[in-house]
Image 1 (cartoon, helix red, strand yellow):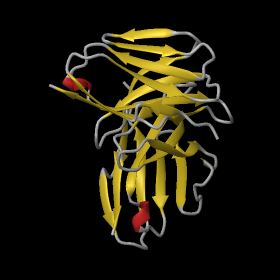
Image 2 (cartoon, one colour):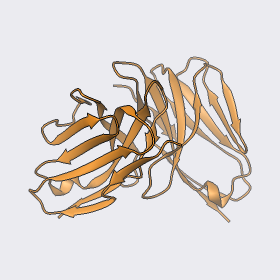
Image 3 (cartoon, one colour):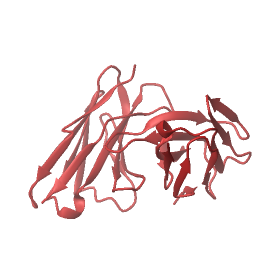
Length: 116
Length: 112
């Protein structure tokens, strides 16, 4: 199998604080992980591509200083939302690509972030 | 910016009816995937098509990739309530790291 987990599944934080979301590939090594954002009743928007051991590549319009991505190992990537505001409230989903597989990506279950 | 437009945005049909969802772009994609997503969960991959004109069948679902690899369709025969969900197409692009850009989504509701 190819299982991807995310932690936490839900988080509520106060405006101005930072929150970290973890994405782990449980049974495979992932050279590349992707972070998506999804607003209610909308599609997924790619935020950034994270390659193990190198800096993340952010999509146009995504603030890299606000959404810090670290991919320190072949099984873990983290997304930190810094100085969160209510408009950052969203569903954050990660996906992971297995080593040597060019097209397949396996999605995590998502993290619901609510900023109060 | 590559965009993938899906139509219709919303679809509510009776059990047993057939339906088609379209995914269109002005850009060429190396591959195209279709996903279904339930509320509060990550998307689940249904199929990947890579060759222009390719047709794949998955039980009652038929997927087609356009000849020019700019568009795709998903046809469901005899829809069932269990088909209810958000259907997403995603185009694969090799600019830099290979990545997928998601379509705008089609929300399907099948009534019993």
